[in-house]
Image (cartoon, rainbow, N blue to C red; front, side, top):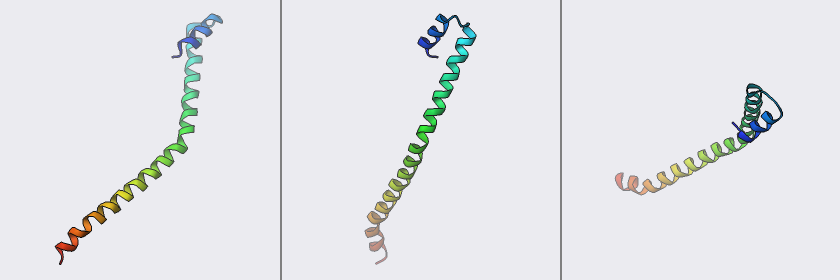
Length: 73
């Protein structure tokens, strides 16, 4: 809970319950907005993770290619 906001609401003569509800509603609103803002970043991160994994796989296959060539000669 945001203590400063809670204290400001209490100074405005709100009850403890009403002040706590306002603070919780604001925290919930902020959490939703942060989640919405991060959705684009999460999708980009997922795409980059797949690209990096694919490049790693290709590099592993290239690195193992000489061993397979020697094995089958």
